[in-house]
Image (cartoon, rainbow, N blue to C red; front, top):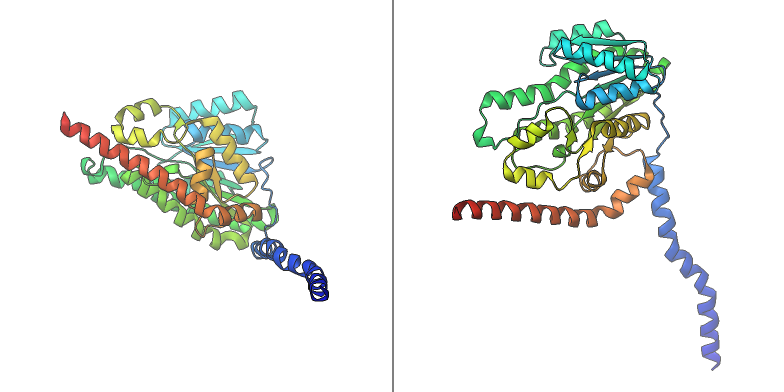
Amino acid sequence: SLSLSRLSLCVCAMTPALLLALLAPLVLVPATIAFLVRPRPVRIPIRGRHVFVTGGSIGIGLAIAKRAAAEGAARVSILARGLRRLEEARDEIVRETGCGDVAIYAADVRDEAAVRRAVEAAGPIDVLVCNQGVFLPRELEEQDMEEIKFTLDVNLLGNFHLIKAALPGMKSAAAAAGPRSIAFISSQAGQVGIYGFTAYCASKFALRGMAEALQQEVISHNIHVSLVFPPDTETPGHEEDIKRRPVITQIIASSSSGMKADEVAKKTIDGIKSATFMVTCNREGIILSLAAAGVSPQRSWLMALTEIFGAGFMRFVGLCFQYSWYKAIAQHHAKQKRN
């Protein structure tokens, strides 16, 4: 009985120590991660800044330009190929937002010299939004190489022309003018491969590698890179794009809910202002970004913890998506054989 009493006393005395030992990792692990990540709040203002948007005459680009103007940008510059549509977009921005300085530049992003001239004429840029893009859904076997090269030239190489032209001016004044931003408009098809999007996916997946490497190169100049992943978006010509898609493509693409251009624009501007690297636009986008986080930059320690502890579950969710897609592909081909 005496031995049991002594044992009970020892256990009682050890209980706080045991509890501390059990609880310590729960406190120390997040604290260590938070220390290593060391997120510092960054606010990149839009008001009073020069915002330059490519592909700015229609769709998401025009919506981003409008929102930047509505939030008080001192100057909004938009670049696209067609002068007439640019003029219409400029008038639309001025009419809807009252912005007094909207500049337009007609240039093809595939033309390095034309891009350089436009950027030089625009002057130092505070926020550069690389939004231009083409989308030609078709199975790879059905696409000719000219179409594939066109997709890569616009969606990928055009961004190199823009960054090479804009970066010297952005770096020279960044320290004095506060933080600046470069945003790439990618796609959820830049996070997961989709049937019929082979060339498009290649062009959008490549943007992530470009953005991650570029962020390392420019962070010391107080320039922050954002990578935006919109889903299917209601833009001019979107309905025609859907009609041209292979049947399987539409089945897979419908896994993510669509959005309106102004909704994507709001997510983009909010992501730019908070210097978020991976900017998601809807619920499915959050799942994709958690599943595909990899070693991408993360400023928020809360999101970092979510990515760490949610990785296994998100992998499970991703496998469920893949299973449903491959099942749909098999069923479609089986139906074709029966017919």
